[in-house]
Image (tube, rainbow, N blue to C red; front, side, top):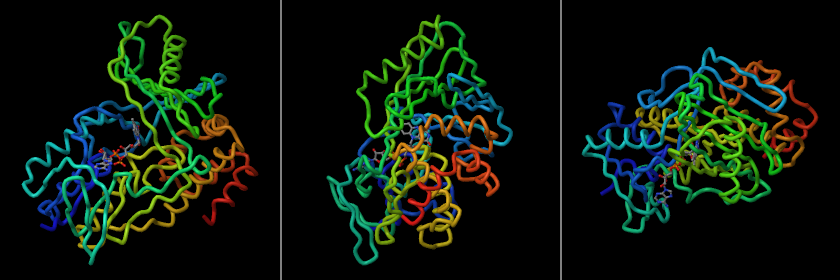
Length: 380
Ligand SMILES: Cc1cc2nc3c(=O)[nH]c(=O)nc-3n(C[C@H](O)[C@H](O)[C@H](O)COP(=O)(O)OP(=O)(O)OC[C@H]3O[C@@H](n4cnc5c(N)ncnc54)[C@H](O)[C@@H]3O)c2cc1C
């Protein structure tokens, strides 16, 4: 049987697309096959992102913050957001919401199989798994099978370990999220702590680095322990949950499609912002556009707008500065958060800034270093 759509990968990209298709009255009866090698029954990650209006996944937002903090050993900038909210969604809540919703649709099949390869023959897309071959009009791929090969020269890894801890004492302020705390050692490269309290007793504390190589697991654990004992001295705590992640931040091009029939989504489609690793909000915008195309019976290949290409160039420029060590990452973010209105920075990092925002941010940074990097990346 030929499906209308095969969604290969049931993570952030695949399930966001599935949910949007099933919420759309024109598309919800399409024959869909969802394939993932995993059952998606564990809370393997927490997504944070910012948006203005309530989004499609508002009902599962676990916590949100209107006040954020940026910190170094020399200054703390605490700011209240007017337009945006910074939100957290737990991976398992997201998987459960979409997979439960899909159960009501007999036209949606779910298979737990390992995808081995893809093919396109006579305008039909095919997926080959460890258990069979399936074909469709379009395949939406978020597995890493079609990713470019990455090297230390062109890619930084954003790697992190996070602990959700619970304390006996009410030591956290759930109103204030600490976005970046650069007061930790920078000996490995750009390194910061992320502290997101969800109640007076609970917070997610994440040790994050942007460097060419990951650390040994015990190094992250030691850093988090030390941070907790320095910042929250009297606290006795237990670890409720932990997460570990590695996100590629690369100058390499992630292909948007393969022969027009296999459309890459999520990280595989280049929707991880290469200068920050944020993905969730960009996946939402992309999958929304795909559904608009499908609804009009048009190709789901969504060309990048001029502005999106400009943002990609900004990302590549910042990454080039970090990779070439032209300037320390901590200095770049410190200058921005010291000199620029935070909401403007979030607009910029969320690809929603105006030309005035862009120029203001660029003027705050040492022009020479960014100009050389920008020119190098301009025609790539
Ligand atoms: C721990 C962690 C925390 C993160 N936190 C944030 C955050 O706060 N904010 C943010 O914006 N981004 C965050 N990210 C980055 C990004 O949002 C996530 O990685 C996101 O899940 C990417 O979506 P995706 O669909 O591309 O990949 P995934 O969500 O990883 O989905 C890919 C799916 O494909 C399946 N798969 C892979 N290979 C195969 C195969 N061969 N056969 C069958 N199935 C296969 C996997 O099992 C998986 O379910 C985080 C990432 C991690 C790892």
